[in-house]
Image (tube, rainbow over all chains, first blue to last red; front, side):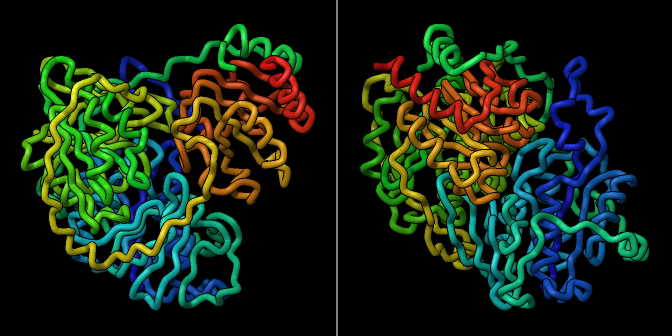
Amino acid sequence: MKILVPLKRVADPDNANKVKVNAGKLVTTGLEWKPNPFDEYAVETALRLTENGTATKTRQGEVVVVTFGPKDSETTLRAMLGTGADRAIRVDTGDDQIDGDVVARALKALVEKEKPDLVLCGKQAVDGDSGQVGQQLAEYLGWPQATFAGSIESEGDKALLVGREVDGGTIKLRVELPAVVSVDLRIVAPKSVKSVHTPATHAYPEGVRFAALMAIMAAKKKPLAEVKLADLTSDAAPKIQYLDYELPPARKAGVKVKDVTELVTRLKTEAKVV
Amino acid sequence: MSNILVVAELSEGKVRKSTHSAITFAREATKGGGSFTLFVLGDGAKAAAAEVVAYGAAKVLVGEDPSLKDPVCERFAPTIAAVAKAGNFDIVAITASSFGKDIAPRVAAKLAAGYAPDISGVKADGGKLTYRRPVYAGNAYVSCQLTTKVGVVSVRQSEFAAAEPSGGASATEDVAVAPADAAASKVTFLGIEAAKSERPDLGEAKVIVSGGRALKEKFAEVLDPLANQLGAAIGASRAACDAGYAPAELQVGQTGRVVAPALYLAIGISGAIQHLAGMKGSKVIVAINKDPEAPIFQVADYGLVQDLFTAVPALNAELKKANA
């Protein structure tokens, strides 16, 4: 199976509460670039689908990672090559000049060239929190989609059984390939991904894998191509325009209560919610 | 002046409450002129449409078809796009639930429309709609506009109050269900596993009792009596779900549900950014945690530093006494 994984770098999501706003502009100074966590889960999923979990050195298929960004976003791609992806593509853009729709249309052209069996992406990037690229790409390609996947079982590379995590439960879908699948966080639980290459009894460690030092060195030799955005789409105009940022209204300073009696009194008389 | 198509979300043949939030959005967006039309589609749409004729819609469109029994995007999106085109609507509004967020981007792509997801506010000035939406897990908000003639938005239930009926009776009109996308033939709906619960839905509950990993195997044993006492829904942190103490569909946060009840009790929850993203909009937040440094206390209106295994039963007893 050949899998394409689009990947975005985002300002350190574990410190997202440190973003600031200055004159309507968002300031993320001091926050390190990190791969979008849901995209990392997509890469991990792609690796699990293309290997025998008990012998992960040999790839049974190909995993291609692609990002949209400036030259230094190649660091994010190299990190993914270190974990086992075979090849990387960087579409040369700024970090902020495009929107999800431009990305989806550019990816369509890239998919038509690369011809993967599956596009795996994160359910959303945790900076803009839009969650649209996968679905829009599926529409532009005329492919089926399965969003918010918490489990995937491949059926001999022809179809996937996907467990979609939805409000109030899990929807099970069978999707014939090629398809676009977006993943949610439980996809990286030990037994969430079942490939045809891995014994059914195999359990992965929880979460995504880290690159060994040797692998990071070796990844420097893996191919990383640069593509111009204009070569993928002639229309790179965003359809959404961000105007002014602001911080959420500050919550009034809370109080510590000494016991449940005080808590209930305050909830009754002050907050009037019980 | 905008004409808005509001897509209703059905669950077991009933209009979900999230739809009423989308109606509130439409009312606000058409304050300066324009109108909104409701589109009820799915299996059982005809009967469900009767539930929403008294909300001031210019019309209630009904798309009833057995092919829309299961929520398969490749079947719903073509009809929504076709109806939006035929009616020349400026905006298509869909609920920001897992149903809406699956479908809305695909509809936007079909209409070459801009997409504003998860909107939390709208202002109509000079005929142009300006939306407000959370970014960075709710740590910032941004105002935005769509540059396209037609726009698609998904509306956050937690940020728009549920609309009340405004009287009158909108005319209903049957619309043809468009052929499914070719891709629909590649998708088989195998079923939905949903836990049956007598408790209110997380998105609609006025009170939520939410538990973290600290509850361990006693998650239900400790929280159920309190939730019963308060008529509350039960939520959970990622850690509690990952550890298997609570089912995944109870998760509140970036993965899981975004909620804004009148009262949110965070019990044994440390308050990771991903969790706060799902509950920071709650009106009153109570945190019970034995770690005084837990970040949850930074957003809590009332904090109690105490072991939850003693605090929760005591709280329950105190509430019983107070309400007796």
